Structure formats: C-alpha cells, structure tokens
Image 1 (cartoon, one colour):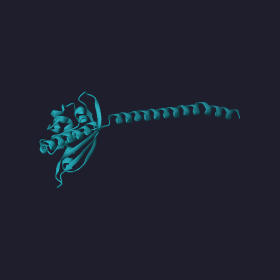
Image 2 (cartoon, one colour; image 1 turned 90 degrees about the horizontal axis):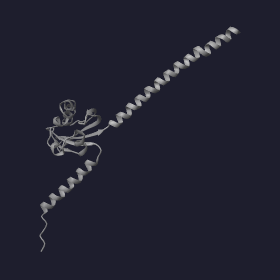
Image 3 (cartoon, rainbow, N blue to C red; image 1 turned 180 degrees about the horizontal axis):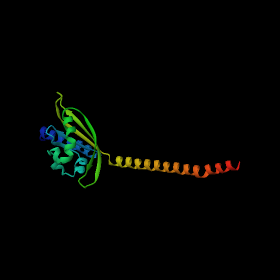
Image 4 (cartoon, rainbow, N blue to C red; image 1 turned 135 degrees about the horizontal axis):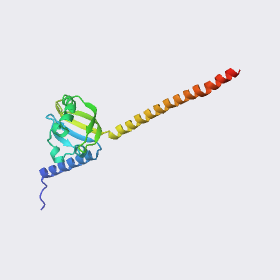
Length: 177
C-alpha cells in the first residue's frame, strides 16, 4: 500500500521550484534588479546586481544599501531611496566607479512597492548599464566637433581663396579695363 503524499512537503517543494524559476528569469535579464525594504536592507538582488558591485550573493541578502553602495554613492542615491519609500517613483542616471576601477554609467529606477492598504513596504530597483550608450554619445559629440571644425576650416580656406585669388584677379581685370 502506498503512502499518501505529504501535502506540506509537496507544497514546500513546489514553492522552492517556483522561486528557483523566478530567480532564473531575473538572473537572465541584462539589468540589475533588486528589492530594498523600509530599513534599506536587501531582500533580493539578481546576478547582474551582484556582479556589478562585486559582492557574494549570500552576503548581499540583508545588507544595508549603504554597505553595498559605499558612503559616497549612498549619499547621492539616498534622496531617491527616501522618495521611493514615500511612494514616489524615481528615475536618474549615475556615473559609477565599479569595483574593478572602471567607470560605468547607469539608468536607475526606484519603484515603490505598496501593500493592499497602500503602505510602502520597500522599493524595487531596476538599473540598466548604459555605459556603451554614453560611449556612443561621446563618439557622436567628438564627430560633431570634428565636423564643425572641418566646416570652419573650409570657410576660412574659401574666404582666403576668394580674397586672395578671385578678388585680386577681378581687381586686375578692372584696372586693365
């Protein structure tokens, strides 16, 4: 005779499988996704978040946002975090020095998380790495400056040709006439 399945254990296994599935999806998204509670402690951080800040995943859970960002970056981001905890969605760009010393640029969104009664429990963080976009903008600005410089040089050259060449030839022809 078979034993009846233990529904509590089955439910727990199903919940773990569902969580693993959701975490797997979040870890495949090429953006930093995190969740910070009212005490500004991390309750979730996907792999991209962990990689960007160079923190071990088990260390990130429960970590205060100040400890993850560092004092300087926390001071810059704290007003946005406080506004999100007040129920106002936030969006901003930031230049960040990565743990490897390189500079990166991010587009950050802090999205308030409210319960059914409207009380804010924390906020979701969605941060996209826009470093390549900034590099492309810098190249476009450089090309635009070079184009303007080339145009200005051509204007000067044309003015010189007109003044020194054609204008003198016209003046000489006038004298001959």
